[in-house]
Length: 174
Image (cartoon, rainbow, N blue to C red; front, side):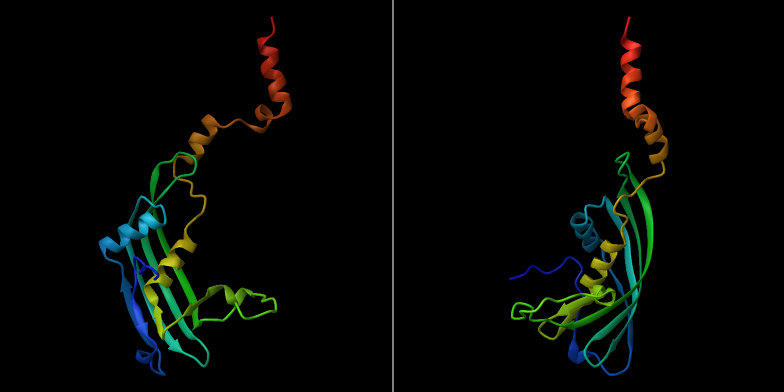
């Protein structure tokens, strides 16, 4: 049995009518702590989303905007620094696909990338927001001190290249 996600907000298909339904989601402190651990972040101070949910013929549209205040670690210095994210999302929930029985190759288009499958007649809006947050994170975050530290620690192209190594040897000759 699959473990329930850290930030889960289940909506049953039977609760979705033919008109757009809007709402807001907010992760509490415990959910934010668990998500921070899952995404290897020092801290998530705030995670909120406003959304609209609309049932279509073969998919459920889930659109809106998420906002989050969090901390990331700089890839250069390792220091934590504050980040404010604001990300629009446009996700389509579709019924679970039976890919195992398909013998032909499936090609995904750009439009297919924001599709989440649902099963048992229920959508997890919270998990969709959590995944959207993760995808919005900078994979190589650079903090405010990154450039200064990099200039002190890293060598220039001339120093790092083969001629730089020869120049260093030249200084050691008598």
